[in-house]
Image 1 (cartoon, rainbow, N blue to C red):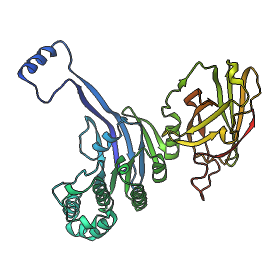
Image 2 (cartoon, rainbow, N blue to C red; image 1 turned 45 degrees about the vertical axis):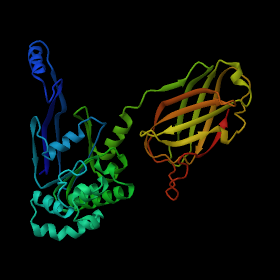
Image 3 (spheres, one colour; image 1 turned 90 degrees about the horizontal axis):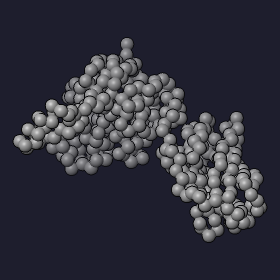
Length: 397
């Protein structure tokens, strides 16, 4: 029997011109306008959301900002009611949705631990049996008898997570709040959540950190515009989400200088350890560009978060410029990247071409999305190797 059953949940909000405080004149004016014009409109944050979670399962929920993820968790936590639909939760629920949620700022850390345990239905003796473990994990033992209002946001987060994870709820709901913590604490939290999941408790985890979702969750679903777009195995869900996520449209920052980008294509072999080959084709209409040793090319490979995964610079190989022969028409350049160290994901190119005089001839971002299906020669003994400047060669010009 599922521990969580969500049946056709919808949540509607009213948006429009409504104000909290109105003068008499404004009130009379709105009454008059209401006969002719609607001052509010419905916004459906969730629409007919339906899924179930089995005991001991860890469900990951992904989606863009505004997809309805946080609204769904607030409904599951009973912070806000649904407009329609039903929910069945068979067990005690602990949630970590925002820093300090469920805590009272005037109470001390010690008092808040006992308060949260009581809300979860635990006896005082049950709370006392795990109290030392909670405090030790949170790292706030020095301030445990200090009112919570004097805690930093990071201290509140550590205590809140520690309470939620250690008070033995059958169901644990966690939103993106872990992004507030530092890297060490995030790693510690993910390890604890993995431990909690393996102990048979149920977790619903919302995060934009796809790596954390992949490592922790067994199953996942994609929310988009308040609806479930897809549900299934977590690896299939993340692959689909990464592949079909909205990639920014191409942006050309420099045009009409006589150099045009025809294409840039990536060729990957069947084996993961094989090098990657990139074919770049340029079209030249300006003869001055064709002067020997006049061009430099930078190519960046950008991951979905907008960070450089690889960065190629022809200036590292030809410090005096690419040795193009004077010609007309197209300029093909073929690169081969050794040990590309790319994880499975969807990537785009940024191309930056400039002359010896630092005159920018071409600058394009978000160009030609491509997908890596298997890890490309990852060297885990040296995680920073080839992070930005990999070893590469130019096969032909």
